[in-house]
Length: 290
Length: 307
Image (cartoon, rainbow over all chains, first blue to last red; front, top):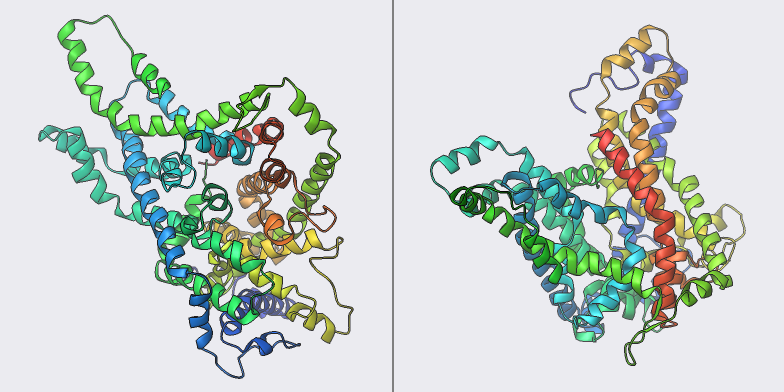
């Protein structure tokens, strides 16, 4: 945006009063939008640091009158957050490994290796995109149950390798690598696996990072599916535990509720602010889902 | 797993001299080996469930006594259940609200943000931030915002208007959910549109301005037509997503009040996990597939044209 001297409006347009008014209104709307976006998020944080009485006062205050940092400790004690966090991390790491190994190899094979009937294999993966996920959600659950995978991490790890969207992201990335690198390696006598592991993988760190962020946010946010697949409390993910024990529970003090919500919101916000560039690029990639 | 084996057996066997054939097999060996795990996993966790869905829609699924064939019973139960009609209506209402409240927002903001001379980066980050908030936090947060004594009602009250029971009033419940989801999701759509808006060549606007086109005329005749394909694609993506929506309806209201937020997908969930009637739930899923399957293909075709 910095390089453009003009947008839809030029400097000249902005000299007209009517355009100035419109531009002013537009800026005002954007300011209101930014406020509407940030207010609830900041409120989550501040509510978590107020006394319960203050959270429930009407009309609500923005800043706490007294800062109750002990709420954070009470929040950690209300449910076993570290255990749920550990379960979430297990699922994230397992999904990540399976995605990279299974889909990384498959997409490399389709993109760069000699496979007869490549189109047919490609279509085999792609076809699943035409079928709305919700329409086979129940048979998917029944299938996991019949395979005896319920209440096991494998019920997340193994199906992580069946993600067409990630497959396409990886394949498009490998398609963009220069074929000369692999030709040269082949001439130098590198075997196919070698050219995958020592050439393609190191070059793919950026796309792996993008995938890591996608997989992290799925593991962190998904509450419904884990609540079906995992039925013992010690295997719940963080989001599932909060859905079950925090959101719809009336007996819990509102300030502690917000302290928990704040603790859970913080990591994704930090990840987002740190990896902004990767994520913003990832968003434009997700536009070409399919 | 049997299917996997049969696929590798169907490899092309052309009539070639033996050394060449061996060589060819060796040449393709790694390619197949790299594909094998993904094929096995796609079969086991995608295609098997999809075909089981077709199969079990004709079965009474019973994990204890075993499944029994019931013909079209599940379908006739699904089609005569009055809840299904309610759910279809609610889903259509939800989709229409999603378009009316949510669809144009990211387009408008993308155009507005592209015109900002300063703070564009900050505004983008702020607009995207709610998208990072986990779903469960969203529900907890908005339950409080929508509370009869929450901040939104405080604002309404200070304007001298009557309080609104956003979630428990059946006229407002679905609207409130759509508004909440728009708050969370428009930022990601906005970024996609913004990339497209910024890629429109600046000299087109220059030329239009020289020809005397006003600001609105430039937006109408240059910006929006340039976004046309993307808008159609996003429209289809949104329709595919909202036609399957159930999570916020389930988490915040469990389909209530009076079934006003009972969507079709939520009904599938309830058939399976409340009524434990997996057969009928699967049949409802098949009906959904028949209606929505075409949309997926349409989206794919548009996407291909786009690239």
